[in-house]
Length: 166
Image 1 (cartoon, rainbow, N blue to C red):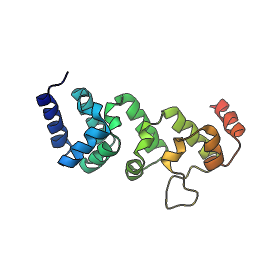
Image 2 (image 1 turned 30 degrees about the vertical axis):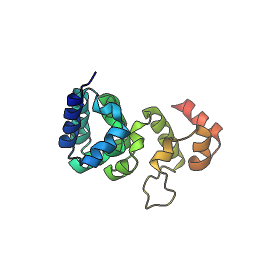
Image 3 (image 1 turned 180 degrees about the horizontal axis):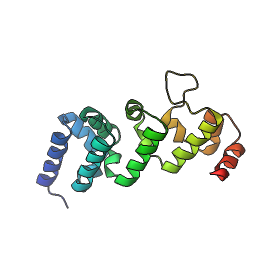
Image 4 (image 1 turned 120 degrees about the horizontal axis):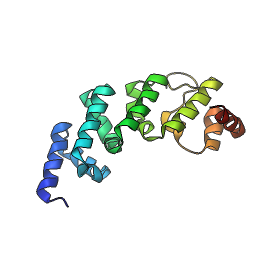
């Protein structure tokens, strides 16, 4: 059980560590209350991973924390695997990841399967300035049938056949 004083110290930690305003601390607390009482070693390690290994600057880390605080409670290895695939294989830039932070919460195999299928079809276009743009959140959101109809523009049987080749 956390005392009021201990919770207040935790709130102060988040405010100082991420340069949050009072309103941002309140927002973070209401968006992901478990984070405030979560293991601080885990939070610190994930902060290091996001800042140093992912290469996000302090402002981007703060933005990511406010958009997707759940990332600070995820397993570091899984988070790193997801980021490596999204950033290094799919070539998604930091700005796009920040705008579509949900992409880091989807399971790696779903992102990988759908990206590779779109790549095979020549439809793997994640730049919003180019034609046939596919939103990163939409890439993994929904069923296979919806994905095939809206983005791959093919039959779900084709997707299932492709999955058997992986």
